[in-house]
Length: 193
Image (cartoon, rainbow, N blue to C red; front, side, top):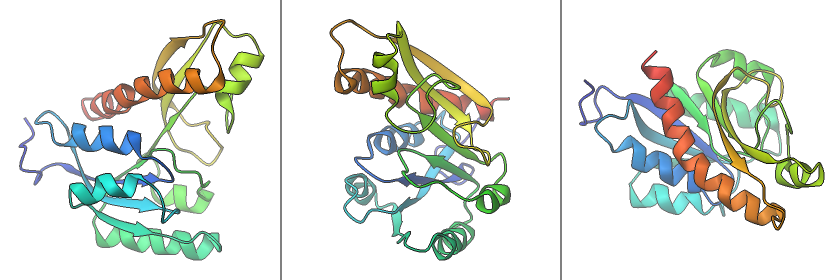
């Protein structure tokens, strides 16, 4: 049984770009006794990311990284991760694509949550694509990150029905609610393997 003191928990960094609602659910999850992770660092490419406020409430260290030069940005991130002894990375709405080299250094230790049922609809505008293609359902996926965009081994998925009256926004809202549950479940699944 993992102690809730945080001493035996897996040091985790969460990468965000926006509202940070998945970050918020991961922070809540990390505080549970059964959670195998502690969130020790937040990395963002956006100094206005709302998610930084959640981090501040819980006194989680954050680093804002300018991505004008990807190579320099990734070096800075890498140094931060090493300095903070990070063992797991969770991408939660991080809108930058990490290089193959960066991913290689953390092989099998980077998770991403994606708002579609992969392998369908990689990349952006997933809800719009699902509605335009008259899909009956969409959903979200937690997967390991590899060098190809949204192509890593799938850990867990959750289906969400699409209704006739749905817009990309209304569908996004329902899928996001499921993402908040799916990410913690996926983490529990990996660490109980």
